[in-house]
Image (tube, one colour):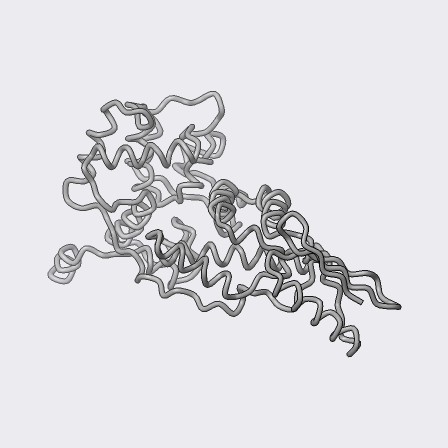
Length: 335
């Protein structure tokens, strides 16, 4: 026997069957509620029923908040992951219960984000995050549903790998912009050094912002990155060039022990202000890693030597961060 009632704008379902625990669920649409009743009663009749009451009473919003709290807060890049999920939490898709989410809901989310002008790669990462959060709810939190609705959604085609490097004169523009005032990119003694250090070491931003003075050996000319700050969870020791050593010798040591004492949020806002003031278009901080990697090859380092510096684990990954200067290759070919 099933009961269907409307209360506070939602449809509340109760399915009672002898020999089974009562099943409760809440839906926005009456058609979804009736479909749920029919499915539960049919599955019970055929002895295929699995209890989805937990999923039927857990909104996607609640699941995402729990995922952030229990899974994201322990990650190295928790700020970036939390920011991504906070974007999702502002979309109306999170109002649905897990049991009523369909692939079409995520297709609608995808299309909405496309209309907002968001890049395909960003949308794909958001969909991937939702897929993992839902799967975690299924596997670990007893929110059983027949299938993960994001799993069958076709990903959007992504643009080819970026090839952006510093253009002629852009480094000088950045250095000049560092010296001028703005709210976030003030004439901080750390901005110019941070840019030059990134170009010399090919470190990821998260690695650079978490580099500690205690892990820098100016005598051996190395910087140690422990596994907990690297993307691949593998520690590595980065050799330091003359220019990198010069950067380190010229900046003061902050009381918090970090070589570059900036928060990720401050850095991101500052970088946007900095490139705008320098009148530079389309340059991301991560492009400095490509610049650095390409320079290492142009200096004559082998593939394995470059990998030991950058931390790339495969040649395919490394190739996406390399963009050789054709004119420099010509010079090598003629020598």
